[in-house]
Image (cartoon, rainbow, N blue to C red; front, side, top):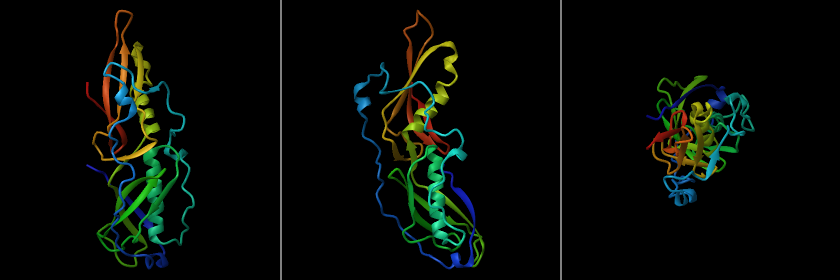
Length: 235
């Protein structure tokens, strides 16, 4: 189930009067599900994949507070739609866990009516993520406190975060005394995917128990959940 983000926003009376309207975003997804990566065509089931992962990825932040804030930041008197667009940019950075260029646009504004839903599009490094923005049903005209929720219609998958999460999940503890190697498919820097669906990319964990052991591979498909990259074991 996709988890919406609920936001409280204080606005001035001038902001409340500005930029209402509902929108339909007809832009196509900029990063379609890949048909197959180069490494998938080369590696058999008993071979490492293209990208070896032997440490945490240096560009991925340890804390969300370490991310740079998007610029420019809207002022207190900015229109409501502008503030929502900025919030979408912040949300995408928190999904990526790595600094990058972001934009956001609600082409017809955000409709300030109870339960109204508007369409917006945010981008991370050029990859488009469509959003629905819904004003909560307790909204009253002229209110200074506006509750709304944002719901991404795609998930952002960032290659460096995928590699970092695979390392954290399977490599950081050192393999419990076993020899091991972590590898993943070479991925685009960023792409948009459906939540819970197979992204088309894979990771593998190779472990060897000792001198008499030839080692074995454990195979994973890369997918997403509400917390980010997820690795579904296939064998």
